[in-house]
Image (cartoon, rainbow, N blue to C red; front, side, top):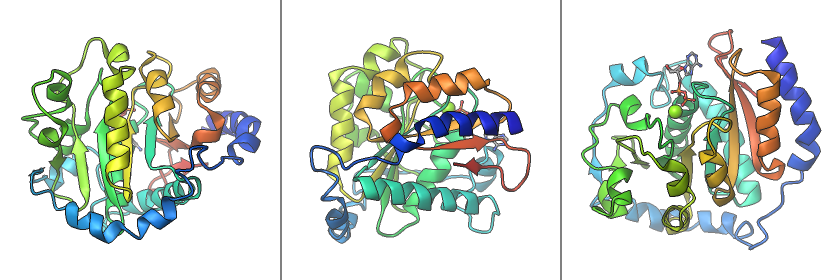
Length: 279
Ligand SMILES: Nc1ncnc2c1ncn2[C@@H]1O[C@H](COP(=O)(O)OP(=O)(O)O)[C@@H](O)[C@H]1O
Ligand SMILES: [Mg+2]
């Protein structure tokens, strides 16, 4: 564990001076972010989802999959609230509204963190959260939530449904999920397509109080994540304790634009309940 922490710190120190210089977006969108929040009351009225399917979630299923942020009595949920505070602060400072979650290699805990973070953000009454399953090779969001995915991003990509038809409100106020039901073969091409670019813009621009979290594939296995990152405001890197080499962590940090790196989480650390070391 110490080895990984040090590798992260070393690699991060290398980049931190640049990371701290994160600037407002050159297109000026950053500047208007705070004032947009004041509009959130109007937007929240719109957020009642007349058309969005509401699905009930099973507490037991969620807990089995480490989804805990909906339950304040669970000691682990506090970790996600702390992460939320840090993430939202950095996003507000920079006018960022879209967040990518990735890792060097698979099984780091990205999907677990993405779902819990989205739930924690949605609990703030002036915020809405959307969670998008963009790990098109190993989509897991719907399964972890225990949702029956009648419709999903697959149907939007196939052209059989429109985006509003496939969004789901999983029984948590102010949270909307865009699930992916089936793995997609040519995922790199799809993720770098104009269709996906337009979809991200649409999700970002529709409600200014909305934080959109994208659960991405790992960085070092395919070029899927690399294709998406330029379209997303900022990124959180998840490193699982003992699962990535120093080289893999450093390679990942090199691939990420330092000015958009919001932080690195060491997951699966051995001290419970502080299972998240955040830098
Ligand atoms: N903090 C943690 N401690 C132990 N196991 C974890 C932790 N976070 C996630 N896991 C488990 O690790 C596995 C991979 O998690 P997942 O979120 O699917 O990873 P990824 O999306 O990065 O591939 C799952 O079985 C998950 O329950
Ligand atoms: Mg995943």
